[in-house]
Image (tube, rainbow, N blue to C red):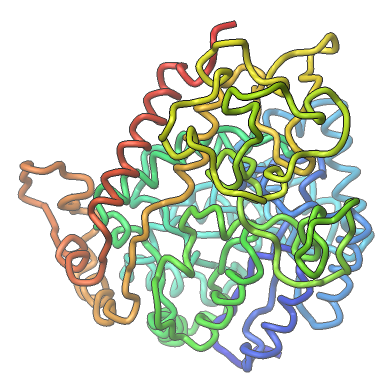
Length: 527
């Protein structure tokens, strides 16, 4: 039983080790809910589908059963910005409804939705199902919240903007303290403050392919803005572990017993979620704030938390044949998971043919297994580090590599190394474009000293003026002035954020090039 005055919801990557972390650190039993979704459920969601851990429906059933044993609710996500009209499609609509019934039959009693149609369907079909309104519904005002409450939702995920508007949050908690409506805020997301691209980005990820990843323009652009103006990191409405007590005190002050904090992210490694659970339960983290928030890093993206690299034996030696790892063997193999294959991010080098020497390797002709570099052996080739120039196929000489050509069936006859993620429209992309995009996910090493942020939040508690202000060095460009300019976050950034300027400039140059190539279509070769 939860003995805290607030509760927590935890993003789930389906690793059973999460239960161990909860047992170890959650002394008040405040983590009352896990949330997640399957990669191949045929339904869109709020995250790029290709980076979701791949579990079967039967495995989900077992995991939900374990949650139930521990009195933890499993909240299933069907939470894209748009359902692409699938809920009214005669075929897809039935599949969605059938899936919801199947989920109910394995014990799921909570869903996160944004579709008004699905909300009405579930609330009329099941009398014991809890419906959470997802972030992508973007309830930004009290009027929005009241509309959705009247529509039948049981819980509302508040827009990030509420996190630092303590006057409005206090009014909300007071208004609904005697109702059954639950309210929750997200602690460790790192979206740009009042991001103007959030609808476009939400639409993009909601239409992603579970088996192919796309170049996420909004994600790269978001990271670029934060690296270019580090103050933008602090303007993001995150909640530090040390500041949780302010929200608990607000719930206690208003007498609202239905207030919760959402901890993300379900696409992250078990190691990442371990840090999140530990820090937020202990309400303290001594380290880089970016290690516990949703900062885009290839190394923290999960695949299967219970499976290791199939091409590597448990002792680390190369495997002759793919081997399955035992269930719950440990943290996910995170490097490049869900992102580009290793060679596209500079990990592992190609065989001689990629440098223009010799003929193609056996696997390019359909014979034998992948070369050693496809399994992570060896360092990057000269062209991956900018030295020596690209291989012939990367410049269009001699044609594209075998995996980028189209066969008679309309698909590349020779695919990338086994297990490597496939990029959407891969047959049309320039190899160097894929490589450069992969590099953007290896961000420069910014260090945000979390402990030095003690006292940072008091400004928002006392002033509550963010809705009337423009951020210096974030929204306002250099040299601009405004009567309502605020430099609070900018001033704090100078005290708590450190980085190597040369590394930042190098990454920014790469990032600018990638963004331009996506904008003008030069990521594609002539066809």
